[in-house]
Length: 384
Image 1: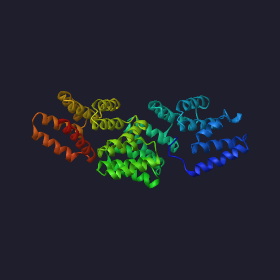
Image 2 (image 1 turned 180 degrees about the vertical axis):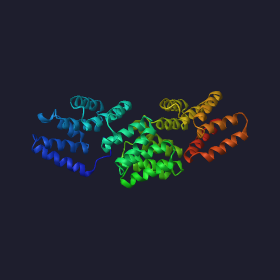
Image 3 (image 1 turned 45 degrees about the horizontal axis):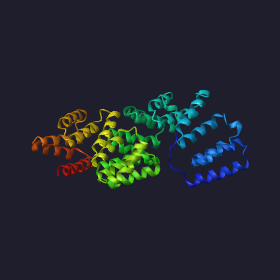
Image 4 (image 1 turned 180 degrees about the horizontal axis):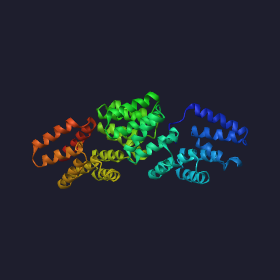
């Protein structure tokens, strides 16, 4: 599986050295393969295109070369071509594990998560290399099968690879999603004890953000992005930090990157909805919240956010119905209780309003409270 982590000077130097050797002996198949692979590691895509026009004839149909050609196509974003490359290769050699894993990776990158899971499910977890296990677990996570993902990840970390920091980091993010903060922190720290890990830094950042430590969270999200510039969750977190500070201009780019790299995650569209809500763009906000609900109709906070949009439009009946639905889904939804307090105020029941507000302040994260205070400012401004 390919991780876009950037390229070092060492990788560039090695790519240059091997390319020069290849130029001196262009018919040497082994040297061509080593030079080609080194260009992939250094992300020298123009040079790779040049080399593809000069592949030694005997290499063109060899499975090991076709495999690394597919890796290049993934790394350079030519996903449809990579899909074809691996489909042809696997028809000829269906038992090749590396190409099969990269085929599943390509399917996942194209958003075909169900197909990717089907391919990975043909393997026993214990038979997979680390990168294959990571891919399989990440696909389960993105499909929303968090319970199965946690079970499989724990098995991997206890029975197969206790020091696999990539899987430990991914497991920490799953525990964040189900609000098991102690487990999330434990596995993030376990990951970082065994290596640098973007998921682990992101988990610690989310914990800091929930505690209202926005500046600490920003630095941790940035550390995650230094390790993996395509981490959609880290980009999303930076956007959340900006929203918590009511800095809409700073939130825009991170949220756009989150939509680019993490489009299958409900939180991406939920936070884009909040961004538009804070800008006063109710129709755009509603569209994003609806997209979140399409991904998971049982996500209470997005249903509650739709109730908030209805309330801001003056549609009290719709707001009340969506609020009650939200609270049936999650009795602790801060947004739903906030809307409920505003509905009580609209009915002149200020004692109930105060009781609900007190409940929100006690039970909600500091980040949720910051967002709700920002929304209140907009509502006060519109009313004024």
